[in-house]
Length: 222
Ligand code: O7M
Image 1 (tube, protein in one colour):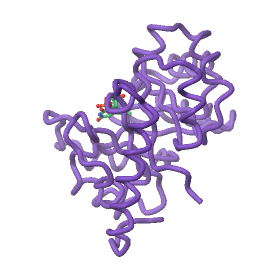
Image 2 (tube, helix red, strand yellow):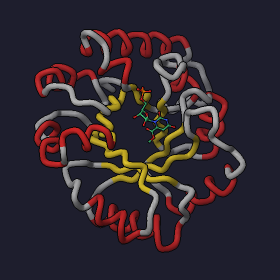
Image 3 (cartoon, helix red, strand yellow):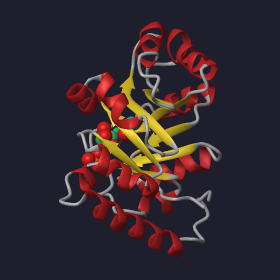
Image 4 (tube, protein in one colour):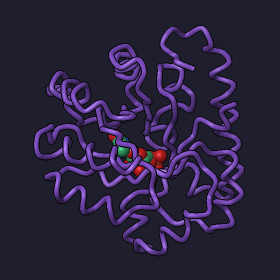
């Protein structure tokens, strides 16, 4: 059984003890650039290496030529997965990164739709073509844009969809999953809470209750 639909967005350090208490109630941890800038790579690795979560996803939203992206991810071997932008295109960039990650049994997620208001959908067709061509493990679709989640679920039936923007950015917990996402990415509402474990438990419960109610939703995969 799925232990949680929450991916903790770690953009700020939490103690190893707190993370250890949370590990059984999280699907994964997304490592943000602010965290790595605070701790450095070695301390970030030390903090995360012993944790029992399904995925450690490094989110530097890579957007560069293949050579540079490969040289970034090879320094972060503690992660299972990496997030890159899709707008950078395929040849000489995402194709090389994807080949490198495949060869090292690591996963790629591509950003499809961002959660903030100013994200433009003018390039949606182009982005979908890049996603089709690269065929990543998953895509990021903002949880503040439920129609887009449903649309992407229709277009990419088997792909993992992860959705940020829940809580602090206005998305309601559980809505992204009911619209077709697999996991909700949640940061400040957990790491800034007085008691992060209690906050996580409350959020997990809200999501599971909502998911029970939307069970019939046609776009939910699981
Ligand atoms: O819950 P929050 O708002 O504190 O954190 C949200 C996290 O999701 C934070 O780590 C952002 O970098 C990330 N995020 C967005 O907020 N919006 C996006 O469109 C995309 C991401 C993201 O995770 O992209 C991979």
